[in-house]
Image 1 (tube, rainbow, N blue to C red):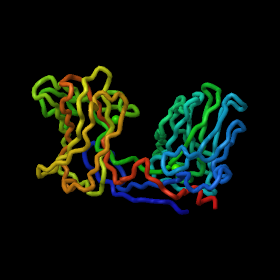
Image 2: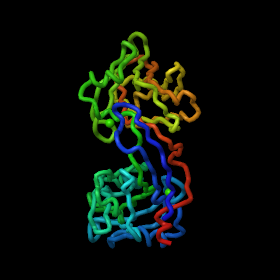
Image 3: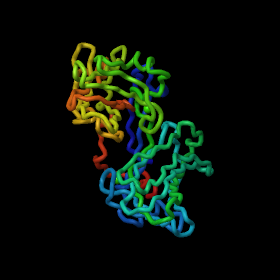
Image 4: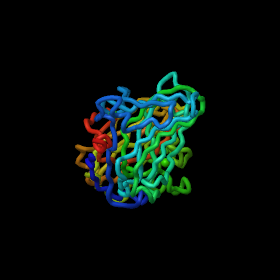
Length: 357
Ligand SMILES: [Ca+2]
Ligand SMILES: [Ca+2]
């Protein structure tokens, strides 16, 4: 087997970090770049119901090709299934999840998406069901937690199920199928029972702000709510997340988090700032009127050339005034990553395809 495999040391960086194994890995199982024709991809990703067909599409998440599933849930058997069975079982015990990217196309009927994994004996694990997935028009991550699935040592099959909701015709695109481990989390805000517990770690440094636990977070669970009022002294808000002892982040090149505002907020800027134990700092990008962005949005900060990343002591959330008003900024999923790649990075290799040569 030939897989693009990267190994990364995951360091425990706080009391709230994901505990567990010391090594993380990512394997790109299929990016659909290696197929030369519809017939080649159809031999691997097989339309198992008569109301569907598979093929290649230029609507790609990475590179220039993706899998296209054309389906019609108004035709027998009124649901769709596409099946990829490896020639031999694969041991996924080093991995904690399987992810892929999917999107639909305007004009689609609304049909659900459920990805099912099977081992060589047919034991299965269902991922989450995404309601009307075919009507989501931006590439979206679909993740299956396989950490508790004992049969992953003999993983062999991916089944893409599209149960009917509108009983209509749709095209669904799939790209970048990856086995990996959960990213190193600095904080997902799940471990706090009260605002007081959160504030021991992350508290406002200016009198016109405060921090609170809120729900739902990005993808469910908890997140942090920063309440700010830039119409009050000192006319900007600052919240400091203290890491405790200096953390060595030299293995990482990016810090990411998810943020959103909400309707009714004044429009204020958001800037993330890292500090090292010597007082040095690094500013991330400034997001104009970030507090008025109502959907969860990724914030990504390049830390690769910052010398202070060897001894990081705090993460500061700055909310400089634009409207000088009040509102709530929500934060979740603070992560560090060793992967500089973005969604637009092209790769020229397709692991699953290699296995069928
Ligand atoms: Ca691709
Ligand atoms: Ca969370």
